[in-house]
Amino acid sequence: MSTTCFNAHILTLFPDMFPGPLAHSVVGRALDKGIWSLSTTNIRDFATDNHKTVDDTPYGGGAGMVMRADIVGHAIESLPQEAKKTIYYLSPRGKTLDQAKANEIAKAGNVTLLCGHYEGVDARVLDYYNVEELSIGDYVLSGGEIAAHVVLDSVVRLLPGVLGSEESLVNESFENSLLEHSHYTRPLVWNGLSVPEVLLSGHHANIDAYRLEESQKLTEARRPDLWQKAQKIK
Ligand code: ADE
Image (cartoon, rainbow, N blue to C red; front, side):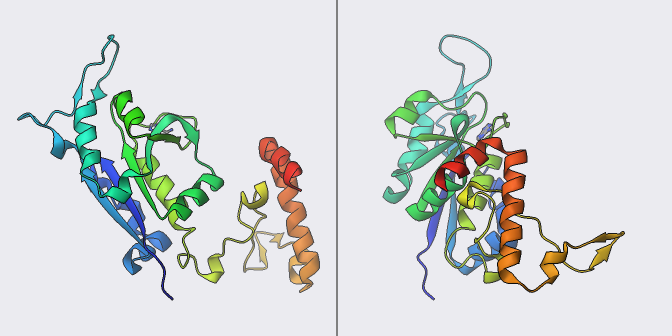
């Protein structure tokens, strides 16, 4: 089977954090197989002073330091042309990553992720390179690298040939805006708890109906926001 390689580029002050967790499990095996590639650019390599300074105090005052536009800009310029097309900046201000966004990135064939630190990067870089801000949730991390791992894990597992049929994408949480049903395996009885009877029936239509109903109940109880979305696409 021939698959085109998905290319991920990371702009970071901490290249040693990659591939990190992405070298393991299905995503790591896909990296070994060449289904996707990962390259890092150390933003600090583009600093021009002896101290390799990448940040400075904010205009207008205030706490923290800001990553300089000229240095981050030079790091971006060093990327191959295709990697400059779609750049995401990991930031709590961005649109929150969801399954639809992960699918969109997976289909694009490549992605560049800019990881900030301190108070973030000079806003002119984001404007100049048409960078889209992307968040992984409503909390603040100390830098973008862990968020970049999350984005890449969610994207790479969607690439053709990454998941085996036993780890299929069918019926996953968020497909159809529903949370996934529960799963059970041996032993049949554990600590006095049995597996739901219908799953032992061998009746596939009943099993599918049971799982769908469980998905719907779970989604309605835990994620009213998703449940509303699911109602609309029915
Ligand atoms: N950097 C800091 N916090 C973040 C978040 N919640 N999502 C993405 N990048 C971040």
